[in-house]
Amino acid sequence: MPNSAAPTRETPPTATDDFALFAAKMAAEDLPESLIQSFRFYYNQIQEGATGYIHRDQALPVAQLPRAAEMTAYAASGVAALDRLVVLKLNGGLGTSMGMNGPKSLLPVKNDLTFLDITARQILALRATYSARIPLLLMNSFSTRAESLAALAAYPSLVHGLPLDFVQHKVPKIRQDNLLPVVWPDDPDKEWCPPGHGDIYLALQTSGMLAALLERGYKYAFISNVDNLGAVVDTDILGYMAEEKLPFLMEVTARTSGDRKGGHLAQTAEGRLLLREIAQCPPEELEEFQDIQRFSYFNTNNLWLHLPSLHAVLQEHNGVLPLPLIRNGKPVDPSLPDSPPVYQLETAMGLAISIFAGSRAISVPRNRFRPVKKCNDLLALWSDAYVLTDNFRVRLDPCRHSGAAPAGDPLVTLDDSYYTLIDDMKARFPHGAPSLLQCSSLTVCGDVYFGAGVVVQGNASVCNRSGGPLWIADGTVLRGEMECSALTGPQVDESTPTQIA
Image 1 (tube, rainbow, N blue to C red):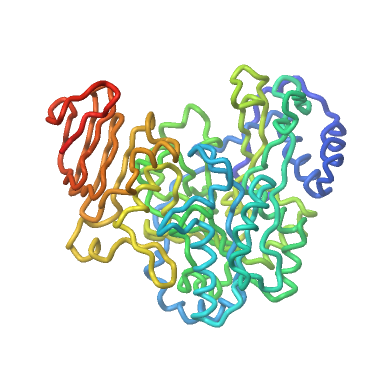
Image 2 (image 1 turned 90 degrees about the horizontal axis):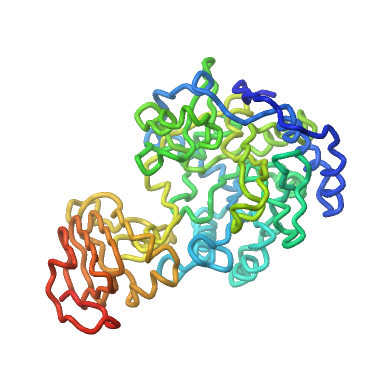
């Protein structure tokens, strides 16, 4: 296996050496043979006691990287390579953590446009500007496919001689006590799990999409999460990849305290780059893992891939890309913590940086990593701090770069007890987001409702400890720290919120 950061072994549990039960279960679902063999590859490691851990002596800090800002000389090469580029978005997630019942990519994020609307319009704008093919390709899950393709039907000109998607695989969950396939008659779907977004490489192959792309002359793929609106095609970076003949390029950015639990870039003693996710960190090293000074580069999950190199590596390994293992322990039914514990065997697509000889990483500005993971992020994007450009890129309002307003992204922190679900947030912001153009940070603690035309300036904090709802009146300007108990307003019966004027 090319990755020199070998997984740690521990005393193996009682196990069966017979993989036939898994193979039969997967074959009954018409899953491809190469996926079955890939699952066998990881299952064998679990039988031998693999944890997937990468220890500190195998993951050393990376001191310095080339910066995207230094790549302007490659712009012309990037423009020339656009006709051989495919834009690939990971679109397998449901917005369940935000209270959605369908694909997260169908959530309106700016000017009533969804993630998919904005992505589709970006691609069409790129095609028009550069007269290049640039297909859009989604990696869907079975749960997101139908609704997402129906939404893209509004853009018939996106179709460009290729399907718009391929589907992520599924793999069996493994009982922790005996390493056999889990059986869960109450909900058989919970016997399966997605194999992580590292499945993208195998799914490209088994779907026939990789062969189709190569046949049509595509050489490069720009891969990113659909909910990251900062992940747009950059011709400087594409040109750098093309001229330097790189097989794989990862975009990383400066790690902040908010990224402490995310995957960080590291390297082996020989200087080979690798990605380490928190599930691959031994428990006794978690504090060091989260040291943003020691490990200063965070994986944005914006990746650039040379498709012929992927084909060659898959051929070399008989269709099984030997990505480092991530072993996740969970209950078979996440809603029932006492249900039997299982292992979910996963991989992450960024782990491929250790597979391709000659892989590199590039340091990019934070504006290329602007995901929507919580309602906090969504409220900021809804606000006037961000604008949608003519080519459908989401940017900070220019005045935040000119000194006329606070610089950088506004930091929004909403109380998880009241704002975790999208419907709850909409109810508390019935007129949309307040003005955040002059806002550095907004923190809301407690049950707070916002009226129309509310303006937030500088660093503002509203904390409601009254035990009941609180209204921010129309047109209120919020600045500094405000406690509900210290604010005056009409006191009414318990069923009516207190109001801040």
